[in-house]
Image 1 (cartoon, rainbow, N blue to C red):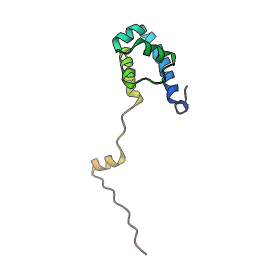
Image 2: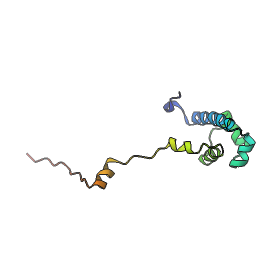
Image 3: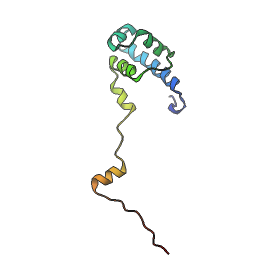
Image 4: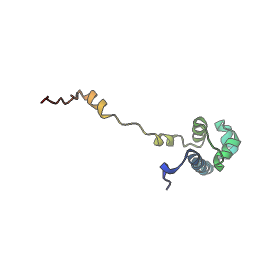
Length: 104
C-alpha cells in the first residue's frame, strides 16, 4: 500500500498512469482506441502510462476515466463533505450563546 502523504505530485501522476494502464488493458482497449474515444492524444496516453508525463490535466484524466468506464471512482476520491456543526445548529434552531464572565 502506498502512503499518500509521502508522494509528490509527479509521483502521484506516475502511480495513476500505471493504474490507468492496468484498467485500460482490463477493459481490452488499445491506446489508439482510448485516444479516439477520449480525444486525448496517443502520445499523452503513452507518456501517462509510462510515468513520463510530469503533469496531466484534470480534463484529460476525467476523459480517460470515462473512456475505460471508471469515472464513477473519481467520486470516491472526493466524497461529500458532512454538514458542519454550525450549520446543523442553525438548521435545528439551536443558537449558541457566548459565555460571559462576571467581572470581579
